[in-house]
Image (cartoon, rainbow, N blue to C red):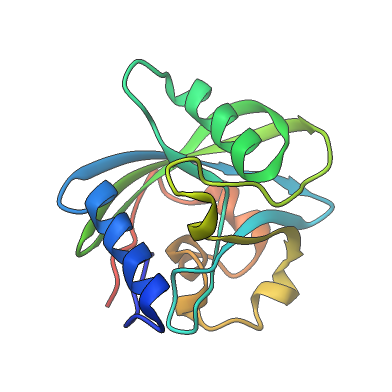
Length: 176
């Protein structure tokens, strides 16, 4: 679930405008990967979203024309985390609607990866407006310390990380 906040400064206002121009007013198809190791899940901290300027979600992003979902997810993982991944089965679909954004998110299991996670970039945004603040594996205990609005909506449907792999095939993650 993406929550836009009132701009904190002129640079953030400009970035919000760029996000709305890029993704607002259209239905966007996104791919996301569930990568779990040793009872932890890999997450990206986006500095733009959330009431307090950050938002944790699984790695992923938009599919571009001519790309398969698998190709897009591999590309997104390389861009955002530096990892090369082996994409597994489709787990579930999440629909997110919160103006100006509307996204259909396809969540896939990540079977394995090569490399060490590191903070990547979002190539659609200029270097001075990057929104990836952190990349790390987090336990359920760590996630439990956050408010719901600080986490992707999928976490509101589970009570433990292993439950993610048993989510229904379609979930609706719009904001309240």
